[in-house]
Image 1 (cartoon, each protein chain N blue to C red):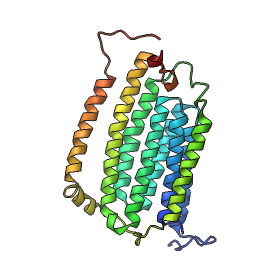
Image 2: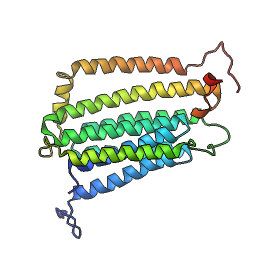
Image 3: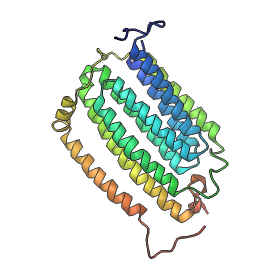
Image 4: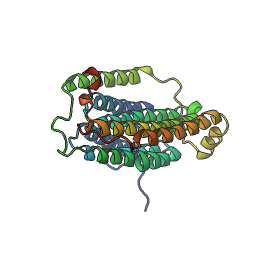
Length: 181
Length: 103
């Protein structure tokens, strides 16, 4: 049995349906991350948000970046954030006041920024847009080791520096007793 | 219908705005870092969308997105280490209680 090329009642293609579902889940989880009171739940919603983005990258025909998203964001950064949450959890549970008192100003700023970006997106017309193209992993690999070789090496040095800096900053200094504030 | 550059860029704009709000409004330093990750992901989504719909950017966009991911990983490492180091001294992750320099 084969699937029909369009969805029976609505007349959309399957990619449209996938895009709408993934977009809805993405916006919903992002709002849960930002608005949730319990910060551990925010961290768990963040993982789902990253997973939805990996799905969108697959939909955009870019499987290499989707795999990197799963490995780097869901596998490394999300776990790092969850560890940091557990290390800095205060005893009294989640704080009663999650937002600053100026949260209304932040909401206005974010709405204005989103509106400006959406208007620019709508009116620019994008003259260079061509047909949809998948990205082959072979092309990306060739580019990384030819045109972008210097950037690749610099990123390697940057990651090494970040590892050393992270260990140095988070290291407990034995000669200084912990301050109790 | 929705497989257009404009749709992906609009989604990216929404995600970036949500991240901006979280960064400005949350009191917890780790929640602010999570909002920064949301904003970086929004930028990455728009880069990949440009790569998929503009033929001359096809391969370059994926490479740039991978570089952004590496820089984001470095930023998360150092940022969280700083938050943990401050927490060790001040016993709170809330940024509006870091007022030592104004006292």
